[in-house]
Image (cartoon, rainbow, N blue to C red; front, top):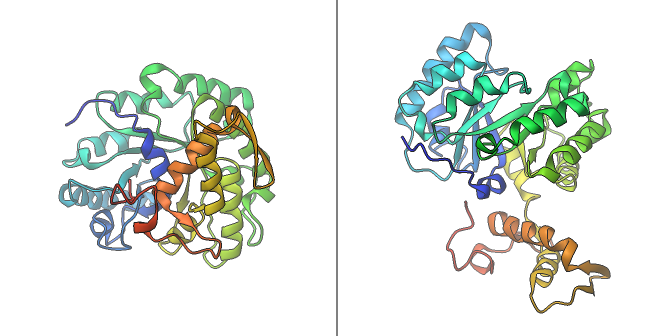
Length: 323
């Protein structure tokens, strides 16, 4: 097993719509290998809330078979959402566990994080702690958790922090309405605070799942708000949601033109473009992010269609926009 640490910052942008799959799924291996649902940028095999206690033994058996038989080489990032510390220990002993990119940690706090981290300290696995406990509503507690995650040996392993919207709403005695976005619930302000607490310190966040399968317009509106909050990915619970989400990650042609102008070394410090003020010193990080997003997800025409891959100037020399 490769025991080196791989922060792999490019993986953060490459998560896209992370497909959430219960480990009891009959096609677990086919999903992992890309033979069902097609190519997925990232997939999360769940042993926690998606699995009833009575089904846990079978779920872990099914996962172990999939790990043994899934392809070694894959450009899909594979994660297991563990149920608890004991389940993580069992998964780490399974043959084929090195094929996983890492683990999603449930109900993460500064009090339980070390019990998970110590198990993977000497492996290559990356971690995505999930913020979904009552501590999330306490800004000071979140700052203390950030300090735990910022320790040098830990920081390199944190791929992103996942926001567990359903668990947080449950703590408030609420469920997401069938109309509107999560930003129109009390969690809107909470997500905004999490962004300001973690992102300035280099921690990325992923957006909560959209649980309604026929509300495409609201899903589109929510992804737009996710992106406005700087979310780098979103959980999908159905394969139809994957293209719906990732379509919004395509970059508008006007944005890529603006980004390229901002990073142009010959551009003035401040200039006017598209009837907006552009300031190189403050907009360069945005521009770099837009360019990377366009490389991964493509450029969107004015009519909404994605630029054909072979015509995308950010990917044509590379031969592939996939991570």
